[in-house]
Image (cartoon, each protein chain N blue to C red):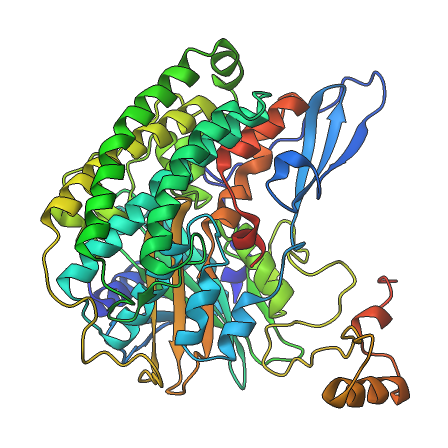
Length: 191
Length: 390
């Protein structure tokens, strides 16, 4: 397997427009990754899959990460044919609020289909070009993204029949609170 | 940038399932199979559209068992997640432990003592054996053989679970591996008992194979059903016995040789018709290969400690960084992806669930088949909902 620098220069030699940046990983695992600009991610992905030297035909793991200023999607690639890997790709969104689009890599590797749906569901990254972008684990009509670090759990715990101490306090708080954010208060989507 | 609009021509393996055009006679029937259908192995739902008996559309619906395992793990220490990994694929808790321990060991650069590596292989292969045996039993059960083959499999599984109980204290929720070794050592008496159990198992495999392969119904209903082409299997990230039944030689035990798998001589069975029957046979042959590994491992297991004495288990604070560790679990490639920010709990903790990703191609395999075959094809994927929904 080539080093991360060699992979980067091979990509840049084949695709001069591509913006690729090495993200070093200081841990003993030594799994460094490549950060792609979202605009060129699809062509780079296709190059890595089809190039005779890389043949990264198998996308193992896709996941999201919630960083303080942006959301990130991480892709772990392996090659079934050449039996090497992983090559790790990352993409960042502009921010965490209104510019959360990233290009979907599902057209290149089908295995991203459910995993990108899961990231859309739990992190709120919108994958443009995904053939079937719906929530995967949470139900239709759910409004928030539970894996985000600032997610607030809804106050809809089951009361104990004889509430006491902490549960009693929460139950009273719950009764007096203006309802509107709990799970049960989220009606079906109207949009 | 213009590249954003670059058209990606669809590769061979991409192949969205082609819509089947109904013949225009009669109406379509939409069935919601599950979440409490007996064949769904838990709470899983498929929205199936039928034209007569033929499946023309199938959409899986997930999330009934979702408890956000990943979020919980990000709020607790590294060690505290270990018992929770048991509950992912609750048939194979020991291989889950192993995958998680492996990922953390990669993250902190921890070595594992020799004896612990052997114990991991022994327990991992016993787990694989009992998982494959019961998944085959379930598959036959779904064809209508109510109970008998499943009980044959469960009889042997019980012997293996007894071994687990004696060593780890629990039949299923083992919580046995640690970062840098295993929790307790196996006594010589336990090893003897394990050798006896393993020596008996080949006879069971022969008997099981005879029982099943002489069954005309099984042969008729599984052959040529649910074909999965190798290009699509690779492209869709299918792993484990599913992938190998599609004729792709890819076993993480061979490719990564994690642990000490390079010391054992075993073969990787491959399918050549890519159908349900091949998946069935690949599992059966893998059971035989597991026994080969077990025999050698139980003979060669060296003495020594089972934990690295310098390993830090409690209060573990890995240096900032990340690691992805993967293993060949009985269901497929089970991976854990961890990001540490230097704190006592992981900044990001991700499970790569083979059960979920193997379902990506469920619709492709079922289209055009009868609704009765959906149950079989789904059973041949071999999933556990605890892992699908996490």
